[in-house]
Image (cartoon, rainbow, N blue to C red):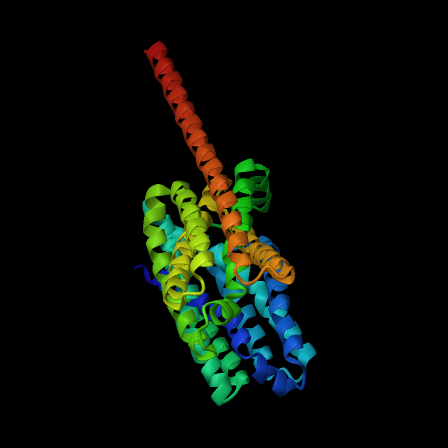
Length: 404
């Protein structure tokens, strides 16, 4: 593995930890700042808003710089945001610091994906992206549980301060290991022109719909495990750690399968996701089956992420592609909002905690159909390019014959 990918994975680990660890520190933060737990919960929404706003904005500002320069600058924002969060004297200050931290999130993954695929041969591009994203999934296995424990035993401020240090380590890794010539400076006009391509919007729609299936269920995983599966609350954290292991394995496997099968793998994966969720809804009251199905669901869902991320860059057909890559990160957060909202809707209608699984199954089936459309468009585009190349070669050969 190129060491540059390790630096990107460390950054992804820090970003994943800071995004999700707040969920495990809600009581501690609320007690420390003298506010309600629900008020602190709004910090999660504020972070998501920051991701959506920052992904296209900071990426557009960074187009004129090299990927390494942009990634280092984004990590500086990340370090400052977490450091300010660690020392925030008031709730309002913490909220502002969390939004600042989130601004770097989507852009880092967007630009990082472009940089990652430049570190390896083209046939291993999806695999490179999966290695970077594995840092994010490992955050749910190691970073979040460890951060929650430290917050409970010592201080939530210490956790956020430690995450800032991870950002500093990432900066050092990027400067030491990511080649300065990785990628090239882009052109904002060309990057924006990529959004005129229907195929780019197809992939973004696939992300928003297909991955909403994941968040429709994962947003309510705790009550699903306790209310439906009947697991004690103390078992939720170990089960979520198993879920994290599943997502890590799925991400790494998806990188290899994605390079080979592309969007055909995504179409099959989303169809399998729908089957898993339907089975989960039926067997949710059986604890062992519920845990196994949840882990499988996580593995399959995350296996498709690197494929879609690489696919949107290729669909752009422009030099660089960092802006569409960042837009896809924003689309993941839109999927988060859509899935969580639809899950909340069916629960509010007293349809029970199995209802979000059926919602997720429906979203996954729609996403599978979209993946087939994208695959068909990919094949048409490839055929068209091949025909153009053949025509060009024929024309050149004809001119050479005439000149002879």
